[in-house]
Amino acid sequence: MATAIVIGGGFGGMASALRLRAKGYNVTIIDQCERLGGRAQQYVIDGFVFDAGPTVVTAPFLFEELFLLFNKQLSDYIDLVPVEPWYRFVYPDGSFFDYGGTIEDTLAKIGEIEPADKDGYLALLKQSESIFDVGFTQLSSTPFHQVSTMLAQVPALLRLKCYRTVWQMVCAYLKNDKLRQAFSIQPLLVGGNPFATTSIYSLIHFLERKWGVHFAMGGTGAIVDGLHKLMQEEGIEIQLDTRVTGLTMNGKTIESVETDQGSLHGDKIVSNIDPKFLYRHLIDDNAQALGAKLKTKHASLSMGLFVLYFGTTKQYEDVVHHTIWLGKRYKTLLADIFDNKVLANDFSLYLHRPTATDPSMAPEGCDSFYVLAPVPNQLSGIDWSDEQEGYADKIIDALERTIMPQLSEHVVHRLIKTPRDFEIDYSSVEGSGFSIAPTFQQSAWFRYHNLGEGPENLYLCGAGTHPGAGLPGVLSSAKVVDELIPQATG
Image (cartoon, rainbow, N blue to C red):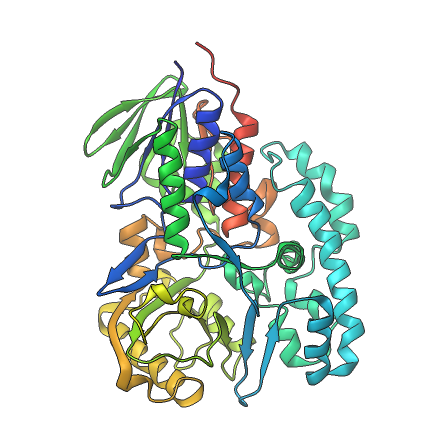
């Protein structure tokens, strides 16, 4: 039987492994972590459950497809439930904007802030849908390794004005600064600066509107567990706590994957690791195409992430499931993070309270939290061993002064992850949170190709490849790999 090895057990890798198994391949998936999931690890401490990575599910059909490959139902493995509001935006003046529900709900909330922007929102939503119809429906699972594919899309991209940034597009429709911030924040969920990210990524807005925002009971770790169980049932070999050390070439093909546990042969090799790491450390230069070398040398990286996990010995029932806590600065703060690469004294935060939906993720009468702050990646030279505790203290203090009174008195089991941890734990180059940044010059054909750029039996999926980061992006990248790899023979 033809064999396939998947390097990296993130969602793109797991989806690729399942799709190849459905095509008849004998599949082995390898990951350096102690459990599958890639960045979607899960920590359990004294009854507090903390999701380490993605927490928002916006296209559940992409998970459903993986179970249907084997005539099984996602609902038998994972309990996905809708979340409302999708997000609460909290502003420095204490006001807030709840986003989610029906269009009428959203218009009513917009009217409370700026009635004149209601018509603009409807026009923005229509534009987002137009971009979605091209960028997601038509192109998210289309291979883009040929420049002719990209050139064929230029007229549509120009017609949709995708040369604009997300910020420029939002400002064309909305006048109120609070609403402009709320509807331009989405690129940060996939590693991009709204002031530099192509408005192709504004399709995220319609994607949320089309399927809503969901949460898996038990956390994102429950999705990983469900996929793990499916893979075991279908005979996929899973090797954890295994680090890949190199790829051995035989002519123009990869003959074997070398690991710290031994050597593995595969007819097809799928990489779900950071492509910059792959080409920089695992493939000899003379086996790489020029395009891979240029991207590895010049591609700009996403920002880093500072993630603080903590439990509380009381419940904060006024805090919704997903909160975007906005600081006083927006554009200049993002410039400090992405361009100046300095750790500012202020921040904006994403606060996740899963116990708002699933109380079992903390002991009775308690809450579990995850708070994420975009920060510079490791190119900043920040020494996180000196900075991390003080930065966490500032975040706790800011939340305590605004939406979580007496927080410092109730915090337990504080755990911190910095860009340095991303670099070590996930082989993420320079500790970037989402691989390369989603700029126009690093999208579609300009992004790392899903068809390996050099070795003939190499394929790539995951955040650094087409179509991009985020759960819908990495799951769609596995669909591209599926398009590229033929049915197994023999």
